[in-house]
Length: 81
Image 1 (cartoon, rainbow, N blue to C red):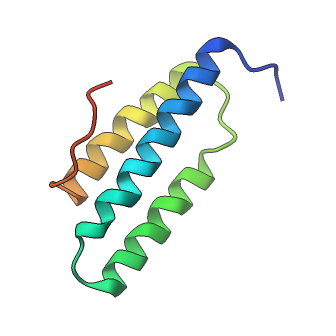
Image 2 (image 1 turned 90 degrees about the horizontal axis):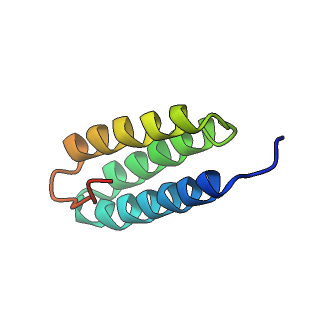
């Protein structure tokens, strides 16, 4: 693993903020089983991508993750960054 740059640190914080927002946003899913499945899927996606070190790829994943999550949880308000 390479030394983390300032950009990596900033992206790490953005990823964690996105994760927190999505978990909070999942509270709006009324069906408890669907909520658990959604949270499990979200965790799996974040876990699957946790070893990515390429800054551009991380930024792309954040953008596509926001788009996907906005479709799944339309009530979720995500920052545009």
